[in-house]
Image (cartoon, rainbow, N blue to C red; front, top):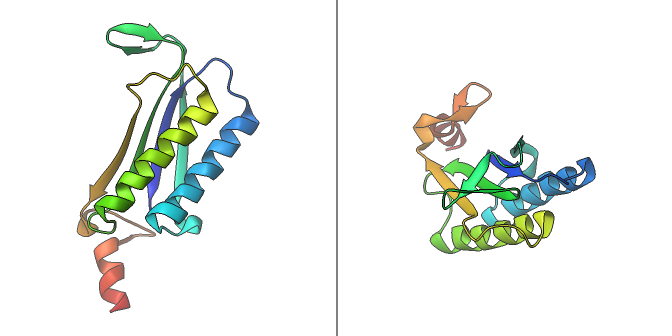
Length: 129
């Protein structure tokens, strides 16, 4: 039940490119981090070109991807593979102007601190046992 927020600055992204990015992120969550695609929520937010800076200099193209998952549900190797693959996806989507300072974060939240459908992940795990 992951939630992924992708924040982008790019003057030229089309709706088909954004749809492909959402689908690609969902596939990565399922394939790399073994999350259920049908429960993966992806939010793509766009900011105005020039609103982003790197090293105090404005940039027209930039991205940040933060994936929230349940703590302990993925190995360090899975997370490293996800970070590498997500960066490749962002670079393919946004092109050569993507700054080196493009961060991908796997944010692990304790199972008792989040959930969906009104139940925490800890409660879901107890109910499955």
